[in-house]
Amino acid sequence: MKRIASYETAPYRTELEVEVVAVRREGDRTFAVLDDTILYPEGGGQPCDFGWLKGVRVNDVRQRKGEIRHYFDEGELTVGRGLLQLDWERRFDHMQQHTAQHLLSALALELFGWHTRAFHLGENTSDIDLDIAAPRSEDVRTLEDAVALQVAAAKRIRTHRVDPEEYRTLEVRSRGLPAGHVGDIRLVEIDGVDLNTCGGTHVGLTSEVGGVKILSSEPQRGGTRLYWVAGARLRRRLAQHEARGAELRAVLDTGDAELVDVCRLKLEQLAQARRRCRLVEERLAQELVGRLLDRSDDMVDYHLAGVEAGLLRPISEELGKRAGERVGFLTCEGDGRFKFSLVQGESSGLEVNRAGARVCEILGGRGGGSGRLFQGVADSLSRRTEAIEFLKQALRQES
Ligand SMILES: [Zn+2]
Image (tube, rainbow, N blue to C red):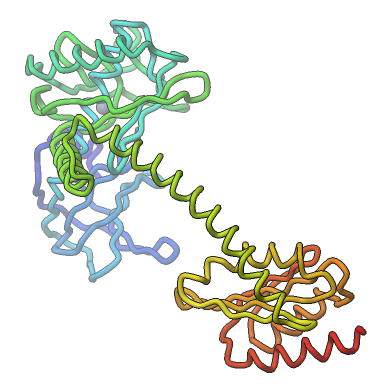
């Protein structure tokens, strides 16, 4: 391996002739080690690059035990010379997000004295942790505006290495060097904006970042986590918002300005309809239970189908209050599911849990009891008559 890999010195390079010096296993994964690489290994908050080595897809790159391992899941690789290609779309996206992070961190420090504690480049959004408990929203807006100015200013970004002695003389914004760091130090400089230690990949001009939008913030261990998107992600995200907005406008038949009010109104109407529905169900259950009790002997048996299936609970509750010495056995069928409940009146002597367990066995299903009510789901109701016969017999034995 070259002492300094090419991804560091030539971040825009998308192809490189390399020597595969070893192909080895690590657990159930296979990786190749090369004499040089243009693929960034995961680190410093930035995910690794993907690419192709002699046409084989490389889907993970990591620094392990002093070497850079290029992992692949499919295909065969052998030692020898070959072409390494970079998945440029993924890389350029990372360069945009990462450079945006430098701008955000540098300007947050310069404008407000907020230090960046951590950086994470995510699949959809990226975030930094700042050491400020609750930033004012106008300050966050000021930060975003300041970043936009630096993006528009097309400032040059350069990287170079310095030895530890020189490093100590420089004014560097840094989260500190990794523990046990030896040798020279890589610096990333944005003209007149930032000088920082970093091992990642960056765009050459701030204008290539395209744009940065801060999305939201949330408290994070005494500080604040700031979420943002940059570059092509910003346009993609806006496109998603536009598509979603258009769909919502069509579904709710209204314009952007009224969307939230219309949603609130619909939810309120829904809540009212639910309250009304519950009231009607209760009344209906009272009515139905009255009729069932009028015509039954020691056992009330009733099957609810279709939309009536939703009444299982209110009817069971009503029966529980009014069944007296009797027992109610209700079954229902709705949305392709079968349910039943076994309800015991206040003065009935049936052991409802034991009887319920037996009904589960007969119908094939499971359930549980609480107080005088046993509820269960059944695989089918084809043996419903058998369950009723069993319950009648159990009741005769009680009396
Ligand atoms: Zn960086």
